[in-house]
Image (tube, rainbow, N blue to C red):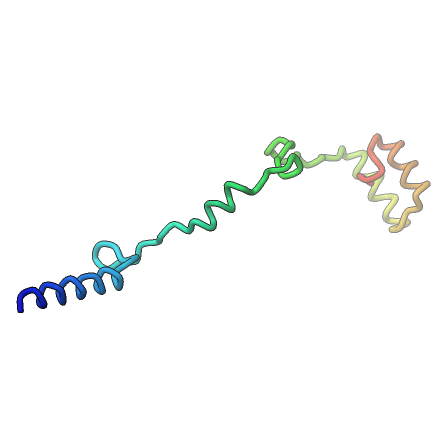
Length: 101
């Protein structure tokens, strides 16, 4: 009878171990590593366009002089929508780019 008892105990212990897989000390779950993620991360190629080539700092804001601000305000007071020709003229006059107007 002890041989059968021993076989039953080892079967029960195996079942408990299977039920407890992924459970650590004090019954807290243990995260198992996912082999699919690790192999995918290692085989994913890094192309040149994926790398950052620009410096990591942001560009500072442009501050306009009082004269530039005054001239821009005067222009937009009279005409909110500028033609491309007028925008180029103002940019040249104020020493700014066309995008800054």
